[in-house]
Length: 196
Image (cartoon, rainbow, N blue to C red; front, side, top):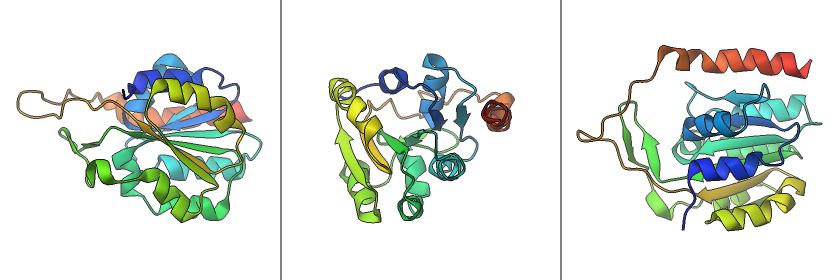
């Protein structure tokens, strides 16, 4: 059975130590809830930018493990980042893709292009990642996390996440508070101060 985003983030954060976490979409709310830290940075409103921000951090701080909590539709927007990351080969780069087959459209959640047939792990390997796996259950994630943390990266982990109800006339998108659009800048300043 697929895991929830919150369950996945809880498992990933369990032994995080001084890892820097770059997150986007639903994962950014979940990681902030289970592991608040000045070493967290969100990639919103820069949808599709989490992997690029993570690469920049990995290149500037090769001493730190960089963990990316990416959305499936977000990564599809910047799929070329896989080749760029593979070309730079950051050794402590662990890239999770939360595959719930949903895409945020600005007014609601829609089915993601390419649907269930798109294989993010295979795409990462084809781009040149050092390793990639697909994980479907929370038990499997918890069992594999210690080994995944020790792998030489970049490594991509495609997680099968429970799909929420698509948004529509009967399930409208909640309003996004204005402060949400200041979040990334505020977190970037906190991260910078924590790394000095």
